[in-house]
Amino acid sequence: MSFYSDKVMSHFKNPKNVGEIKNADGIGEIGNPICGDMMVFYIKVDNNDIIEEVKYKTFGCVAAIAVSSIVSEMALGKSIQEVKKISNCDVAKALGGLPPNKMHCSNLGAQALHKAIENYESRCKK
Amino acid sequence: MDKKNVYLDNQTSTKLDDRVFNSMKPFFLENYFNPQSVYFLANHSRLALELARSQVAKLINADKQEIIFTSCGSEANNLAIKGIANALKYKGKHIIVSSIEHSSVLNSSKKLIAEGFEISYLKVNSKGEVITEQLISLLRKDTILVSIQYANPEIGTIQNIKKLASVVKNNNINNNFVAFHTDAVSACSSVQINVKDLNIDALTISSSIIHGPKGAAALYLKDKVPIVSQIDGGIQENYKRAGTENIPAIVGFGKACEIINNESFKNNVFIKNLRDKLITGILTKLKHVSLNGSIKNRLVGNVNFSVNFIEGESLVLFLDNYGIMISSGSACSNKNLKISTVLDAIGINNFLGQGTITFNLSKFNTENDINYVLEKLPYIVQKLRNISPVYSKFLNENKQEMI
Ligand code: FES
Figure 1 (cartoon, rainbow over the protein chains, first blue to last red):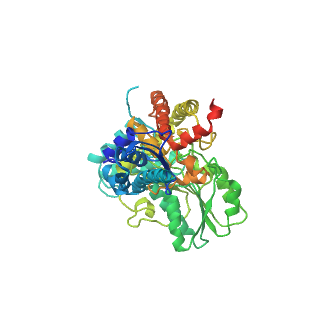
Figure 2: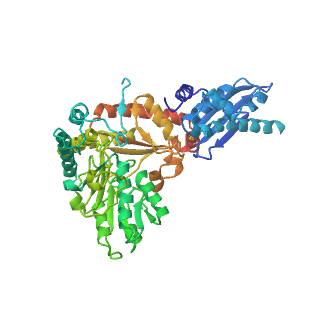
Figure 3: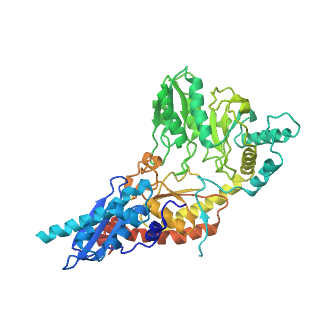
């Protein structure tokens, strides 16, 4: 059995939605306190509060890259309210599980995305 | 180039040499006798055991009686550290080890702390070399044992063991006998070792990374140097290591040593050429990479690079996807999520350490293997850099310069 699930490996090998958004509506950056890695999420939100575009960049392990890829897929086309509910567990589950010592990498994805939403919401208030 | 398997992790495990395999075969189905048995046919096992002992001894210019067979390098290191420390503890309880030792040396010495021993750690410089002056300053009246790894499997640095041993032997702080042990597991396939000339007391050598089988290793212990056995039982290995001898593995180990003795000179030239081709290739094809370890005192097969802006585990598994097998010392690829002790000891910053990868070549590699790596690696590194936020930050900051 390999270390990572097939789902993790396929996202890792072909990560979806990689990149940056020039005029993003929200940006969320997060560092992994354990290994020092880093993830940045960019979102574009339409008038109905639906995420119409999501991109990210990740410096990290296989799990971290796969996590960012699946999180981007989970968020795309969803409403802000729905996306706020995505939890670390949802992410790990969607990837067919992660090795125990890699669970902390799954936190990065949801956290970075939530931070991007916070960032978007704080801009709206202004 | 089509996908192929390229194995470049030869400090972890090695492919068995065909001749080694053939030498072992009769000891499974025909000569399966215990060498300690008295009937006639057991002679085969006895003779095979003693032949292997001479072959191992010859490789390091030891006497045959000075070789103690063990099951692996870790066991030999445990025996050396715990066994010598316990035999000499009436003289003192201070031990010096380098900070880049194999975990079997680090952890067996750590275990001795509970028994009242004190451990001092030798630092290394940025190339991974032990600093002689620091060794001198650490020596105390109650020092009984010094253990310094011969060569490091991760960054390839080879220590000047002869000089370090003589510093210990000729110090004027401690007139007692101070035992000097070196873990030569990574060195023994390519570095010419002469224990008499080095004037050392103990040395660890292992079969599994010299194209021999797993399950055999040895501790060279100089005649008259005291040791307390760590596995107690029968009379095997002159009471120094009990347990039925693993004859097939020991036979293969002996054969592997004989082959090194006859062929390592030729193989070293070959491997070093491939290594240098890989180093030059990486340096010309990749930007923002740095070679770790010493250039001059380096294992012939070792290449260790820090690749900036990316993380090692993802690089290793991406290469694996193309059949290229290497290892990484990054935090993410270590089970404990810490950067490797060796990278930490040479003072690499965490960030650069994250992108550190190690190649260890062997005589079974080919020029084609290296070409294949040099074709795939730049592409994969670029792919990972394109995902990396740190790389895009770097590009943005350096836009001016790039134009
Ligand atoms: S990002 Fe470092 S372990 Fe996953």
